[in-house]
Amino acid sequence: MSTEDLAKRKKAAVFCAKLMGKLEEDSIPAIVSSKIFFDLYEFLGVRDPFKAYKESSNKLAERVLNEIEAIMEVDLKTALKLAIVGNVIDFAVGYSPEKIEEDIMSLIKGDLYIDCSEELFKKLENAKVLLYLTDNCGEIYFDKLFLKKIRENFPHLDIYIAGKEAPIINDATVEDLKAAKFDEVGTIISTGSGIVGIPFGEVSEEFMDIFRRADVIIAKGQGNFETLSEIKDERVFYLLKAKCRPVARELGVPQGSMLCI
Amino acid sequence: MSTEDLAKRKKAAVFCAKLMGKLEEDSIPAIVSSKIFFDLYEFLGVRDPFKAYKESSNKLAERVLNEIEAIMEVDLKTALKLAIVGNVIDFAVGYSPEKIEEDIMSLIKGDLYIDCSEELFKKLENAKVLLYLTDNCGEIYFDKLFLKKIRENFPHLDIYIAGKEAPIINDATVEDLKAAKFDEVGTIISTGSGIVGIPFGEVSEEFMDIFRRADVIIAKGQGNFETLSEIKDERVFYLLKAKCRPVARELGVPQGSMLCI
Image 1 (cartoon, chains in turn cyan, red):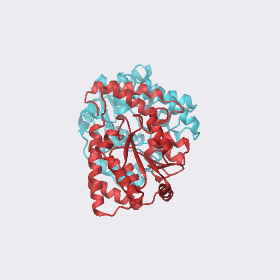
Image 2 (image 1 turned 180 degrees about the vertical axis):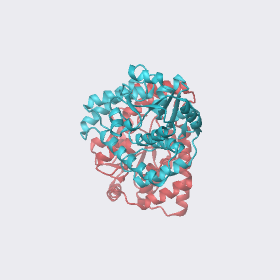
Image 3 (image 1 turned 90 degrees about the vertical axis):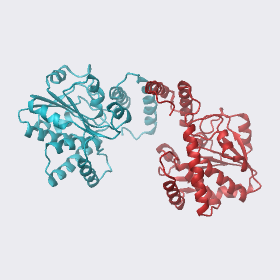
């Protein structure tokens, strides 16, 4: 996506193959792959190669969501499911809005493979501070609807929504959250890092302060799971699809399962 | 496929990531990836991890081909198309024979995107020596039928069929060709190397002698194309599907095209 220049692409492929050697046995994929991306961005002299991709994802997701809200009443539980479904859908170019709506409607009819949503909602009743960790552009519009429903049901909550400090793949940055008007549903904050997920030691002290203060943390997608799962923090609820075999194996669920865990 | 031991798999993944650095700008993918496989086989202490996969591919391909021959008359041109289709089909576990037959029948109805078969047949009429370079197990049964039809149509030909010296991925080895009774259609020879394709400098002098003597060379699949295409040898006819973007771009055809070129 960064260049049409085949010679430059070839150099980038070789550069990238050599970077693969950074992988170590205890590497967290989200972190090591982010660092490879950063080196590659620098090598290619680009800041945000996914910019156009993110913009079209956002546009498509916003449009699809408006249409869904027009044809059905979305309650809190449905909004939670939509937030997971948003993580499943790849709002890539070439995927028609009609087909996406059809897929979404059929996905939200199904049950979650593991569903801890009642426990989450009970915790939110007694919580003061909620921290919401976003994942990709596109799905953030589904997150926003879920957060709107959370605010309606738990108006006492102090809500923080975290985005990445700098562009990385198609992850939502603070700028992306501002553009999607997340200030309507809470306070936008930065993780302080461009790395995918929540890489402890790389996130900012400001972020860690809110992370520590939060009573409930909702974490979207595999990147957040990869970086947070080892701390076994009971405040954290993961909304995700177990997309790859290692994550499905770690969670003890079939690959492709949708989870609130 | 080599081990169920997750710790060993992880070590192998890290070992393999570091080997990726062997890629250079002028690398031929078939050659550099073969060498990575050899190092990985050694690291894992395995000789032929694809053995079971190759056996089931062979069994399935043989069965499917018998059924196709029972329901239709296969002439020389159809046999050539079947040989290309055999390169398209992945005879993997979980693909039902019925579905494969259906796919094959629909594939051979279509035209080749570039079709130099008339030129090939004309050259075979005046040729003395034909060298046939095989690709994968499974499809070799389709190659054998094509070679049978070549023998019927050009009985004067001296036919050599080349397999790999040692196991590499799912490529057909000399042993595999013997087991599939290729001695019924010609003389089985070894490339003298386990590397995918025909890596000049790594193949044996015996092989090169026949390669030089051949009047026509039929080369199956991308690996042979990657290693031979740069010599621009008019004796070589490629039967392949342009599976990946770089090969399709190199040939100036849409990705996925079936070709006799």
